Length: 493
Image 1 (cartoon, one colour):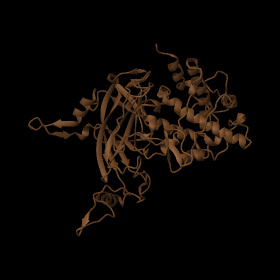
Image 2: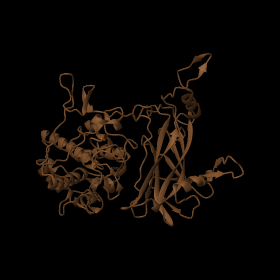
Image 3: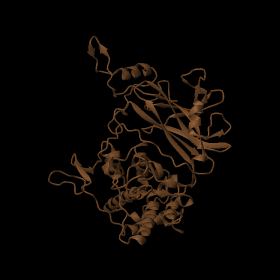
Image 4: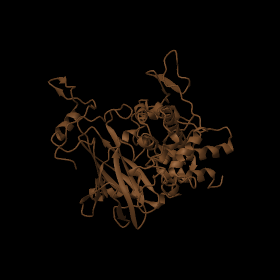
């Protein structure tokens, strides 16, 4: 149909001023309940009996590798490695380019114990950002991890609701709040008056009780919670069977019984060592075209700490293999023992139970010029060695002066240090959320990926073999990552 259609109009409500109280505070749950009601009513105009389902992500996070879940088969959501090319949403167009996903690249899905922690609390304030006593109780954070884990379109607020998976995520979000409110009712709590009315931490924010919810004119945050009590009576959620055994098997062909728990069935695919691509949409706002971007080279330095991860190359001493510690772990221990505390890392074996010799460092550039654009890419580091050097190329918006943020993290979510390299080769440490401005006249900025790659290598034209030499002075940024966040013995950085 002609754009913007009703789908796009509703999807666009997840961005802009109407979302001021939608994220980052106690307005999160009521705002999204109202939003989901808008979605469901619109869908019922097409199919009167339709209901928005929910996806219990804890049934997937219980798998050794959640990427193998049946939900990413063509029967359900389709595969999620770059462009979605199978399933009901194959080649699905959005206002921000083709539908994209890159599951398992960023963060991890919530597990059973995460949700259990939420239910140890009693009020909306206690499970919301800003007002909760500890981040472990904030359900919105666990919800954020779901978006980030799927990646691609659904991982950016302005784009998220253009991915149909958004409805599965927020069906689950509302299901959890519904069950939380059920608990409140059993405990004698007035759920209609559950919004924090006079909380000092909310003063001056968009989350004060009398501030507008945004989606419905004239409705405040506190009134949205009261109104949600009405919506509760219109919503019915079925609880899928959780416990199972031989006498009580899982009721669905898409569940399997593992350790007496019904968890998702898996697809017959081995993703343990797969290098999933990160597909970008090359959009500036809703105009998507690669010619709006230039490319720059980024170096990545990664340090592995001594941990329990052996790669299987053991030293032989006096004719006998010494299996106490392989040569890579032994080397890392010796190189770093005077630099870091020797707390063993718990990174080995995640995700997917893999003890991996290669891991990702994820890098993102994001516009700081008033328009919406971002680019994501990964560098791959050799985690066998104490120190590994790698590189990758990222895109920035092509302007006379490109203004953007650059950030990086390892695949476990640990932030890396980022440095801007000036014309003299000096590395300037960038603080968190510190923007940079880069001129298109900088010789390290190139119009295409191919030009950026060629810019890094210098070929000796007098050598018939044309052997390339790396030009380290052509890197515009340097990324430094440690395998975990143990502090330096001499103090924190």
